[in-house]
Length: 77
Figure (tube, helix red, strand yellow):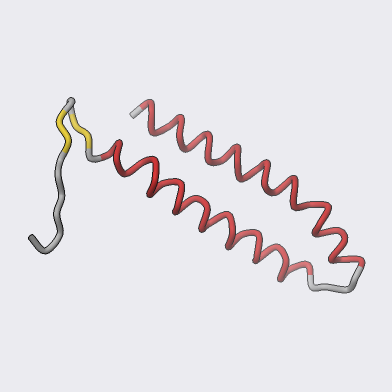
């Protein structure tokens, strides 16, 4: 469980870094007259997709491993 919490913390840190890096682009788009709410919704969508991919790639293999045994899940078998 400790390992999953560390991955969640890492994902949140990465999203904060992405948001900070996106801030100058947001300000440039605001000066050009673009809708800020739309830009923030794009950022939220990107962060959501990032979290889903991050959880799928890193957390699901950890969740399937219980006490040293790995569950082999084969759908439709």
